[in-house]
Image (cartoon, rainbow, N blue to C red; front, side, top):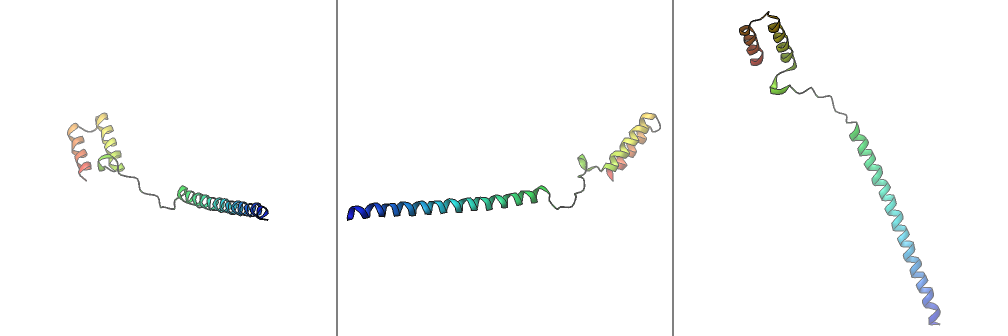
Length: 98
């Protein structure tokens, strides 16, 4: 009689282990799907941040865009001969100091 019980007990243990392993695999897949959904949600939030537009950074050396435009206009006037070198330098110092 002992011979018959051992194969049955063995089958019961193997079946129980297989069932438990299957449940763990299923739980792992569900957890992976949940994690993947959270990651996709975070990525979509990062793709379109709800931040106000930031002002343009100042140009190199802290000179504003308006000052650069005025310097270009002064340089054009100097090239045309309307301003002398001294007048150009004077106006340039005024723009850069303010």
